[in-house]
Length: 202
Image 1: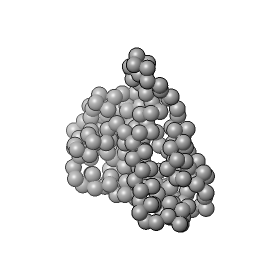
Image 2: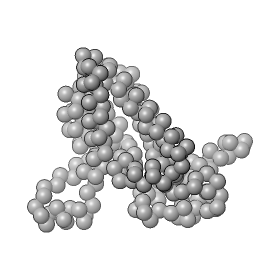
Image 3: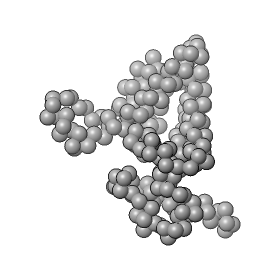
Image 4: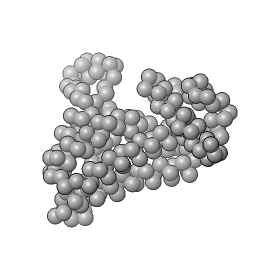
C-alpha cells in the first residue's frame, strides 16, 4: 500500500470513528481523544491529518455532501414532474440524516474552527450540490426564469437547515413546547422534506 493510500485509509478510519461517536454523543463532547480511542491512530497521529475536531467533522460533512451529490446526479438524469421530483429529493434527504444534522446544528463551529484549505475543500462539495440542484431545476422547470430558479434554489437550501431540528425535537424541547402550549409534530425526515419540497417546487 502506498503512503497516499495508507493516509486515505487512516482518514476514513478517523471519519468513521467520528461518525460513530456523533451518533451517541453531543458534538461538544466528541474530542480527538475520544476519536483516537475508537481508531488504531494515536491522538498525536490524528493531528497529522486534522488540526481540530471541527476539521474532522467538516471533512465528514464534505463526505456526506459528496454522497448526496451522487444521488442528485442520478435524480437529474431522469425526466421528472414536480411531484416526482419532490419525492425523489425527499428520499435522497432521508438517507442523509447525518448531513442534515451537521448542517442544522454544527455548521458555524466547523467552518469557524477549520483551516481555510479544509473549508475550501468542503465548499467545493457544497458548491457541487448547488450546481446539480440547479441543473435538476432547469430540466424540471424549463419555463422558469433564471431569477425564479435562483429563488427556488435558495429557498430549498434554506429549507434544508430546518429539516433535522423539526424531525428530531429532544425530550427537553418537547417538554418546553408542551409547557407553553406549542404544537409539535415530530415527523420523519422524508415526510417533512416531501411536504416542504412540494411547496417549494410548485
